[in-house]
Amino acid sequence: MENNQKKDYLLQLQELEVKIELIQQMATVSGFIELYFKELRTAKTQAEAFNTLNEKYYQFTGEYKYSSFDSFRKARNYYLKRPTK
Image (cartoon, helix red, strand yellow):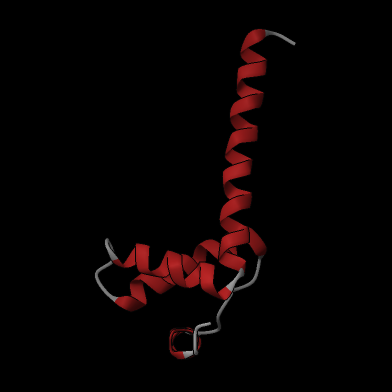
């Protein structure tokens, strides 16, 4: 394998590792919520932040994490109001 091919391969591998970490984070309620709050910094609305993440999740998995912003909002509120240990 040539040096350029190795560099390309390593770059592709690094990109895949980043995507895998993102998917793993998005797969959990807490991870999705954490990313949602980060996305809120640049989004114009809460719904826009949610839709951006839900679409990314769909691109990676072929299904939506939440069926609607309302279902996410209910999960978010439940998660944030739960008692902490």
